[in-house]
Length: 383
Image 1 (spheres, one colour):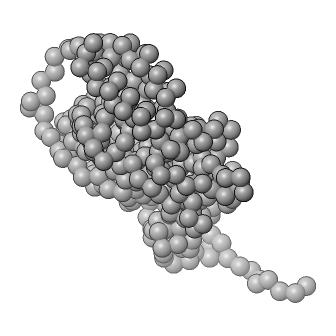
Image 2 (cartoon, helix red, strand yellow; image 1 turned 135 degrees about the vertical axis):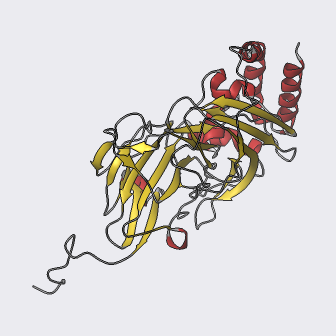
Image 3 (cartoon, helix red, strand yellow; image 1 turned 120 degrees about the horizontal axis):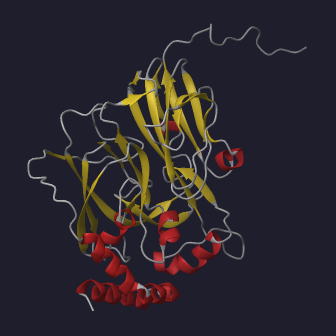
């Protein structure tokens, strides 16, 4: 038996002692562990030799969404090795003003995890850290990566471990990443453990007919469905740990009826004082991901002037969309140049999910009003 498998079994069985509710899943995972380890070892076999020693490296510090780290829209020079670090945090998060709690699993402490930006043919070199203060085994699956379960087969880390994964970003677009531990994928993803990576074409974005598209700002909206158990009186329950919450949370998950559908981790996380900002005349790129469910973004009072609904930049974008459809497990992107000041609601246009469950955000736009685009002819008055 390999050392990897020994560590996997030891950690899993220790977890079972702490959280007995996980036992059926753990036993299923152990039963298939030899096959998974063999698969991972096969992936590790070297392919064509590539000398990376002369390729420039760039260390990138990630930032909390909806903000995105500094980057160039066009690649400068040849491909680079882009170095990132993600630290897994298991933490309690409050979802709404009523104080509903969830034992969240996160990348870098936020839901969604940070947006990473590289260019096509760059190398992504990720250090994934699972601190010893955590209780669960984790990994990461990049939808942008090729092979090895998107990196999931090579990045399984127990508490107190870290690992480094490198992959070549061969496809241009925005892509989901998420945790995918054997036997527990839905639970980890719906506990908040997902994010996105944007792989820009080396020449930057275009309209599909050769016209460059340049944005002034980029915001990242991560839509998240949560499944919080209720007690006999219908009140949301609180649990001391992820393991304690597991059995009842999965029962709610299996109904396919979320209790909360939110942007960036909580109801109102991107409204009021936390609204995203822009000025009239600014062009904004909105990256929107949903790792688990379909969604229908809509900017009330604006449009998707260029929309990559499934997020792949070498496809020509749709033009002047009112609402666009992003399938579950996908990140999409949309461009809009704001033309009027005011508060713009940005919502999932399943309006029940937006207004009743929390899938709504605001853009606060400053500037001068244009009467030619819209004006009040007569104020409301008695007839």
